[in-house]
Length: 298
Image 1 (cartoon, rainbow, N blue to C red):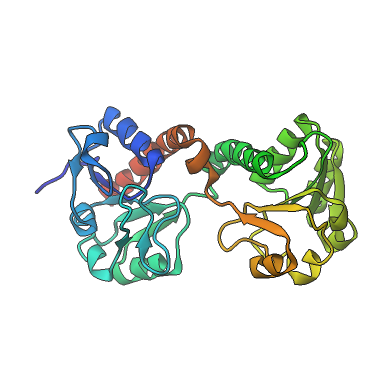
Image 2 (cartoon, helix red, strand yellow):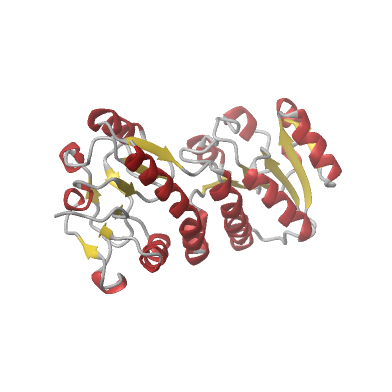
């Protein structure tokens, strides 16, 4: 079958991808999809029964933000039995095709190398990460409100790291009346935090402050909250780790110490899937068109 220049495949996902599919159809893209109930998809979209059927011959493939894990598990909310993606499933993808994903696992990178397709991770792209920081921050605060016996207002909150998510999170927490302290390494980030009215602590000196916090948010994808550090926190502290899996917290150590620690990645798709889907719908068309133009020019 010959597909149009704007043909692409969307494989797996959740409500975010439903919104994305609807918006792309509205913009005139020809789509093949896998992993979604037929009754949730526009009639002009071809719903495939296998991953292989969806990606075979595709010039552009969009995977969900969590992508395909190292255990070959495709993230797909609407297929509760789970879907394992084997190497053979990608054997029909066109050489030189482009596969977009939030975060690429080692397994997905190995598929890209094996089948010579380009792999683009979008989670750290500013046009995705900055808007997504809003539902992430709101979800992180909602989670704290559900689990803490005290209010955010007046609480001593420690935010570790000061990237896009931490920046939005600290701003929102301060607006709710929290006493916000930011721990970071970058002197420029610490200087900005001082200007914004936060208390600051150098990451190397974290141990001097961590015992005062009622609530700790980690956004650093590195082991910053190990057993030694966890031994110094309040016993009733709540730790919410927003870093990509496996996070920056030693969760087994936290459990052994009786410290409540929660890994909470992917909050935009959980707490605000429509907003998150609209963000993707704004971001993807320029990426797709740019790639298709390169293919045509080549």
